[in-house]
Length: 221
Length: 336
Image (cartoon, rainbow over all chains, first blue to last red; front, top):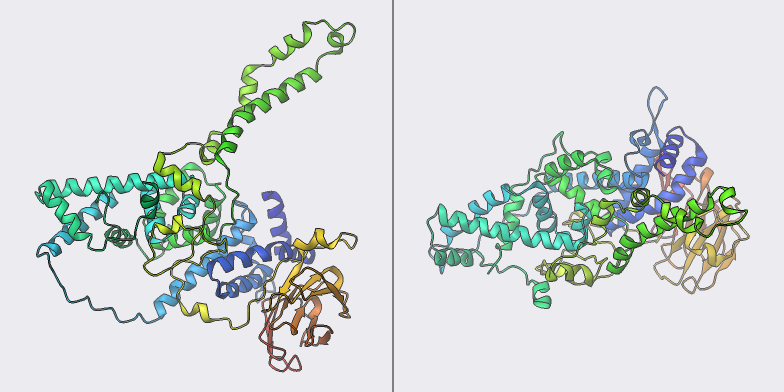
């Protein structure tokens, strides 16, 4: 299959019209589907369309054809490679737009209504401890957490990134969170000299935002 | 509370991500190989190690995961059955091959009753195991290994679930429990003005297959290039050789329309149920303003056109395969 993909890419790069027609026919729907998945308002379709020009090949001043296909090495299927090109362009564009778009004025923190006088100290302690605990995690565990909590992927998507089953992702996320909790408690005990009661109070205080409802636990446990 | 505070965890993870791209960032080939599972183990480890601390690469991985075509989920019994059936099938296949290759002097003259069992038994166990033993990597990915009660439940509940987001203040765990439509979700925080770029009404476009004329419409329906108007009942589809068909009942029945061209059209846009623009190779542009008849519109150059966007019968932009675009605001009389 990769061999066929490489051949198709080579022919397209060489300007073979039939190969190009076949490519457009077979791969355009795939690119459009991926673009729609990135941005349902069809913004990413612009990128997909612009890719065609680069794939078709732009003639340089020397008259030589320079096609993006030249960069396809066959390390993956052509379909996945095209998706990766689209994704890279899209992510780059979003990043540039974020950089150039003026940020809304930072919301001033709500006037502190501190029922707990120790809260600010607790927050600092927990953040420091959690930071160290996260840094000590294995890269794969950290990546899983990042996909799920920062990139806000679903479990299914997270498991796709990690190339593991959804059940494994779920289990390992839970295990990593438990490890973090244990590590944070240990640090609070050892370094901040907190008692178990103080630790519980500290973590409860920091968790002022109870976070989203854990529907899985509600449903299954 | 028996868990880490989620908000603090999210903020801590974000804080630890480096945002500027570096030379270590995943390139396109590596990113694609990651999702085709064709990275070697050391390459994968290096890539994972970098991605675990890089915001840019994590965003690309997330986007790749979101755009991945849905994979049919394998039911647990199927995975377990495969585990047993593979070696069994391989053993049987080897037994059949061995049986068929029995020398004739053993089999034909007077088949001794001992020959068959002896030969079957002689099928080397080690060969059978080698041929039949399932790939451990494959098995581990197949989700055979169950989890605890809590872990296995989410996977069972909806194998191909996706989510719609961002939903303000939506429970983060709800994204894995709620089952949404299979429509692909948008990328993380797609709130940029990017969303407002295109004003043209959505026209669903699919591929055009080179359908043999003798093949029935039903058989080729999935391979047509469909152009759906905002009123979804009204749609066109393109077939090889310049054939255009229109349906006014959502695709249940189709009526062929004369276009006057014989080239295979490549794309179309239907901003209303009666207005449709079509493009094709060698500068072919067709416009219908009544939904039934087609008129040829001339473009400045006979280039191969690969896409078209239109907002009405007057305004359209066509794109050529070489990347150039031509825009008209007067129904194709003039282009810029």
